[in-house]
Each structure stands twice: as C-alpha cells, then as structure tokens.
Image 1 (cartoon, one colour):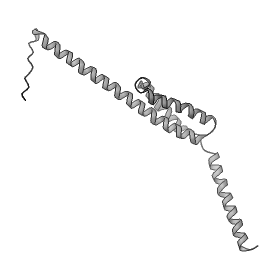
Image 2 (cartoon, helix red, strand yellow):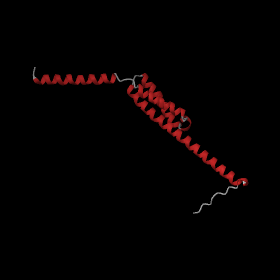
Image 3 (spheres, one colour):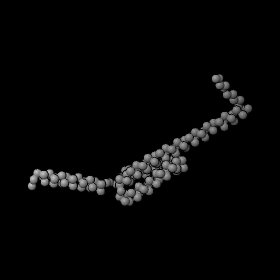
Image 4 (cartoon, helix red, strand yellow):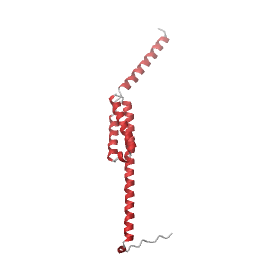
Amino acid sequence: MTIERVFCRARVSACLLIMTGALSACASAPIPEQQISLSRDALNRAVAAEATQYAPLEMKSAQDKTLLMERALGEKNYAQATTLAEQIEADANLAERKARALKWQRQLTDARNGIQVLKQEMLQDPATSFNPPSSAQ
C-alpha cells in the first residue's frame, strides 16, 4: 500500500466516524422535560392572571404553539419541541404580564374615580364644611 492510499482510507474512516457520531447525536436527543414543564407552568400562571381575557392574542399564540409542541413530541421531534416550548414560555410570560398590567391599570383608574366621587360629595355636603386650600400659582 502506498502512503496516498493510507491517507485516503484514514480520511474516509474519519469522515464515516464523524457522520456516525453526528447521526447518533441527532437520533438520541433527550426529551426536553424541563423546558416543557417551564412552558406549562408559564401557561398556568397566565391563565390564573386572566390572560385569556386581557391578552387574548398572546394566549392564543401560546395555546397554538402548545398543540404544535404536543405534535412534535408525538413525532419524537425533540429539537422542534424544545424550540416551541421556549416560545410558549415567552408568549405565556408576555400574556401574564400584560394581563396583570391591564388589571392594575383598571384598578388604578377605578381608585382615582372613587377619589373624585368622594371629593365631589365632600364639596357638595354643607355639613362637612370642607374648604380645600386654594392653590396659588
């Protein structure tokens, strides 16, 4: 055997070894249990925050991706399932925060309106003899 043939066989063997390793790594991708759990927890928190009412688009996106993730898991496409689980978690977190912010905004508006009503009642009731300080500008 010549040196050229030895090098050629060594290259072919190395390529086959690399390809075998790459294929076995793809075939044995683990189930993304932790990421799936995180995405489901985020969805549950969003539902508890009433995100279906206050952030329906974000919740719809998360729920649609959940169906796709379940399908990917059934097909043992764990790479796609992992990607979808990450997106679900992000969408659900956004929906939760948006819902909480809108609810807090509504509570703040209600509280301000209540204060205005109380001020008007105090100013209209002669028995209180409330004289607000004049604002000098």
